Image 1 (cartoon, rainbow, N blue to C red):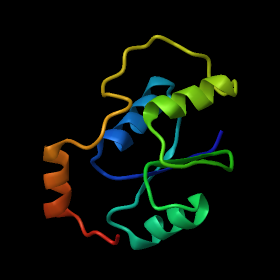
Image 2 (tube, helix red, strand yellow):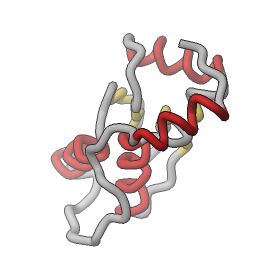
Image 3 (cartoon, rainbow, N blue to C red):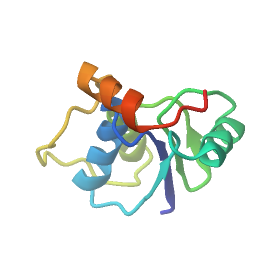
Length: 111
């Protein structure tokens, strides 16, 4: 399975996607859309919209998706078997105030 995840370096929803990848031990390409203008443009072109996270699984683009929704897609399409392994971060949570503050001081925004 080939997985490309268009994520912010620090974001609740992006961290939820990363959590699912760890939960199922799935290798994936973690693509930074905040610090690289070309990555962001690629995500928008492929997904047809500007919101993140977006996850491409074997050519299928899941746009503006939470970790919970990624897990549901993987399980319902028999790409993984559901498991009850504990997760280390919320699967469906927005960015905290601290994450927003960190992004505002350490990143370059293109949108």
